[in-house]
Image (cartoon, rainbow over all chains, first blue to last red; front, side):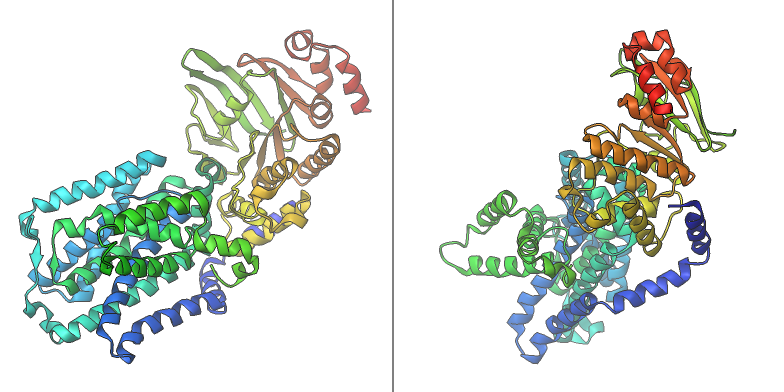
Length: 347
Length: 251
């Protein structure tokens, strides 16, 4: 606090940035949590291949997509404190851009997915500067508006097939070595995207940028008075939270062989992502994973059961209500409250 | 003496209420300037005008040679002006250390996380929050939260610290402790502008005092002069016996 100390700190700060990045990476590499993410991702990736189980692959693929959606949504809801109800727009729009490039222009699949991601992020940044002036319920409503507007636009956009969407022919999978190889490749890529989502979520939480975002999530006005550049930070996190879902969207719809507006911009999936996030625990890195896997299990159980097959969404809604009322911290919040030591190991 | 902060002819109206009008004053480098006045006089509005939470209708704020009028609060913070709020605004879900790190990371020196952790730890200890450093801000007592407000502002190593009624709601022991802390802060080279209702404290801490009433400057001077000023007694102090208090604390 004394002047001499602050001068020393200031002096030291002048040559630090580059070294700090290397140090920061090394510091993370010495911690167990990022390695836990890597190990988990590899296990999910190879399990269906080792067990030679295609139906396991299909259910894990859906789970990986759910983890990606819930984890990136967590950046907005759990970290920045902004409820993005229309989060599925990233997934759908990324899917459209990517699938269009890969099929019509025969661009490499990975490159198409990345272009979809960058395009969606850029749009999100511009939209974010505008709609992030709104707070609370008004922001949530605006995000639904964004999804519905883009939904309506795509439905009437002929180059993307209008209301019927884009169908892929079998030829589309030729560059990947035929449909069978193509499906496996799409699976591996989606699992990688899931792993990257979790690493991103962890990296942001433990960074200076993340500290600013968490401060915004706690009390935006106080954060601004402390010096956090709130409008820019909010737009950046909104933009980042769109990137990997957009990439996943391209891979998912390419693998499905069809993309059409009602499937791509389905608000139901948006709300399901919120249920997964709240179930696992908003604000934690692990929570969205647990929430997504549990929800995927529950969903497939309900879809295949005679009695409940039409009640899946009713139960999802009821589940969300119960969580918000009784366990607002989700499973991870509940666990941390009971075993505080776990905070040292899990994020 | 050089001026660190100049408020020049500041005015701000809210609907039909002229909250601040034609207010001019200067905070000199290294001093503690007290800002007092009756409830509703516009003291907190003045702070909001100074750090950019609201923009003045007319007038200028010059800080350390730069015109900061109309700049956003986070830009003002970067220039080295930090603030502790009257109504505490702790980041409840973050720890005491993390709260202070936000101040250090995004304040004047734009520190990286490692340096910020060091600076935050040092400041938290200096204001007596050392033992509670890993506790969540939400679990602190009122006194603790007041300290946290101050620690968070100080972690930025600011040039000027705005203290808005940091003594309100504290018990006498805590007040005593806090006054010592404020003296220590000034000794370390930070200039302080403080709003306070606890007369004994403001009279003994301040080098100079500015009194405002109905948004206008009523008087300015040394604590003794203020305590004797008939206008101030009429509008705010209400009792000339406070002179005795001022003398006692001066001796």
